[in-house]
Image (cartoon, rainbow, N blue to C red):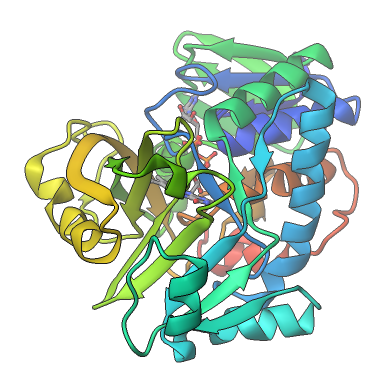
Length: 373
Ligand SMILES: Cc1cc2nc3c(=O)[nH]c(=O)nc-3n(C[C@H](O)[C@H](O)[C@H](O)COP(=O)(O)OP(=O)(O)OC[C@H]3O[C@@H](n4cnc5c(N)ncnc54)[C@H](O)[C@@H]3O)c2cc1C
C-alpha cells in the first residue's frame, strides 16, 4: 500500500481532510491538479463568509459551531490569521429572515433585528428600502480562502502527508481491499480514497451520474470613495436580497477596494472550458445595485474574477460513503456554500475514512439520497 488514505483534490475540502487525516496519524497521499491556493476552482477571491445563523437550515448550526473552533485551531497550529470576526448583517424583508431567527432562537445564538431607520444610523454605508429589516449576527465574519487552503495543506505536510501538485487523477478503481488510483500511466494503491474534486467530481466518477451542475460566478471589486467607512471595524460582511437577486459583500482588506458578488444567477458551464475572462455584461447589473444601495463605492468595477459553484438539487452537500463504491468517501460537491465548513467536514470525513464513527451525524449529506451506482 502506498498510503492509508488518498485525498483527490487538495482544494478547500481536500486540504482540510488531509490536515485532519494526518492529525489522526494516517499515512496520507494528496493529489492536486494545480497547487493549493490556486484560482481555477472554488477556493479563491480573498474572502469567504463565515456565519453561524444559517438560512440554509438550522440543522447546520452544530457543524458551524465546530467549524469555527477548528478554524481557530488551524490558526494556532500554523500561526496564520485565517478567520476575521467582523459580524454580518442581512438586509431583507422580515419573512425572508425566518430561518436565521428560528435557528438563532433554537441554538441560543446572539442576534439583533433593526428596522430601516435604526440600520441607517448603525450601518449608514447602505441605503435601505422602507420595508427592509436588518438581522445583525455578531458572531460571523470571513475566512481568507487561499491562506486557509495553503495553511491546511502545509500543516498536513508537516504532520507527514505527501501532496503531489500538478498531478491529475485520471481514474480510480475501488475494490473490497482498497483503491487503485491512476494518474495517466502511473498508479498508486491505497486503503481508502476521499474524493474532494469539487467541480470536477462528475468527471472523476462518471459512473455516479452525479445530479450536480457547475455555475459560473463573478466576484467584483469596487473602489471606496470613503475608505474609512469600509474597514473591518466599520463595515460588517453583508447579504442583501432585492428584486429576486441575492448579493453580498465584505469589508475592504486593503483600505481601498470592496468585494461584492451575486449569489447564483450565473451560466451553467463545464469546468474545463469555462470562460475565465470577465466582460462588461458580467458586472453591469451589480454595478447598478452598487450605485443605488452603496453610493460610497465608485460603481465602476476595478477588477473581477471568475469562480465556480457546484450545485446540488436540494442545495445540501454530498458527503459520505457511496454504496457500490467500497473504500470511497465523497467530500463534496459543496453546493456553493461550503467553504466555512471545510475543517469540520474534513474532520468528520477523516473519521469515516479511518473507520471511526463521525462525531456529528452526517446522514443528511449522504450521497445515496441523490445517486445510485
Ligand atoms: C464566488 C464564490 C463565492 C463563494 N462564497 C462563499 C462564502 O462566502 N462562504 C462559503 O462558505 N462558501 C462560499 N463559496 C462556496 C465554497 O467556496 C465552495 O463550496 C468550496 O470552495 C468548495 O470546495 P471544494 O473543495 O469542493 O472545491 P475546490 O476548492 O475547487 O477544490 C477542488 C480541488 O480538486 C482539484 N481536482 C479536481 N479534479 C482533480 C483530479 N482529477 N486530480 C487532482 N486534483 C483534482 C481541483 O484542482 C481543486 O483544487 C463560494 C464559492 C464561489 C465560487
